[in-house]
Image (cartoon, rainbow, N blue to C red; front, side):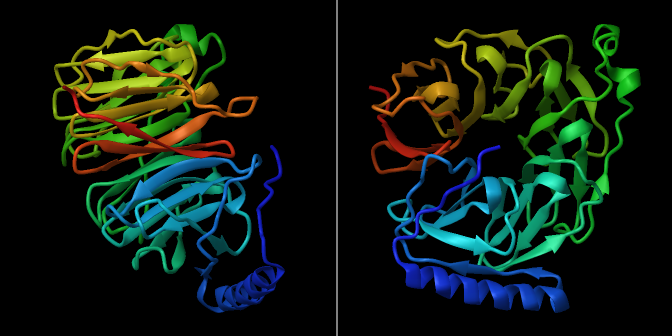
Length: 344
């Protein structure tokens, strides 16, 4: 894994951060907290930065997290970003907010929680050591996190305690996978379309479904298929999942059946995200598909003038404007903004 290089234009700021972080580390000994110090609003991605997750609290306040403790925030809708320095260099994989309540997940079972919009963060005990890839909350109390080796975590108290949802993978997996030595499935994304109906995707084309708010999970689809990295439902019936080698699945009946769709790419696709009729899919080599008709069509948008090798995009967010939508996409060493115009 590449070592991250961070731009610091003013040496004085570095000394200020070092002093603040020392205070944070001393406080952490007594209170087991994670302290953060904000820098100036001039953060720029460098080629070694790897951003994995983006989430906006509202139309003005947003966060991006990534490798080696990367965390940046905006308070003006993404026009300017400033670095937030955490003690240590935790690899952050995803971030999620419900109002001012936020959670960050990452490697080693890491879960951080903020109840003040990210001004301060506390560590929560996950009970697992594997990488957590995605986190999703229905409200300030009920949430889920998924990750390596089939890990499914749930909480009903905002993360004060997390429960491990056990899956008997050997009784679930097809014989064709077990014969290849696959005995658990890495899980990459979790999404709920309402309080009861939820979805998880992962390796081997796995789709898990719950209809009781996450108490029990069952197999909706599994087999020797390409991995699925992201899933999104526009409503209770219409949903999409994307993954390895341009793998694209569509359901129109609430996941009872899935059909393979066609996209103009064979690149790995890491995220699908929608707001209203606007949507975006991002992945390897700068690939981006977008929709302005609620997901009926997904035309490919050519990569902008990016230096080679063309970076991957891991996540994206959509901000609704008065007469269009703005897509913010993040990935390896880059953050780009793209406009989606309404359907004519």
